[in-house]
Image (cartoon, rainbow, N blue to C red):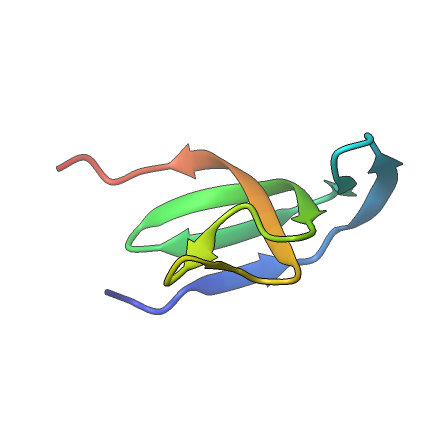
Length: 75
């Protein structure tokens, strides 16, 4: 697997407390590329405690990056 390529050059558009998470909507061009697939970062949010577990244990905090696929290599 190739390394992740980050190109985050946008900014923070809005911070929202939706009662479940703290969500940060982003502006501008914010992409990451992995194996010729490019994804645009749309927002990130936090859960406390984490929604996911490692070895059955929750972490105190989890960050989720929500992306939209822009390009993909056809196989």
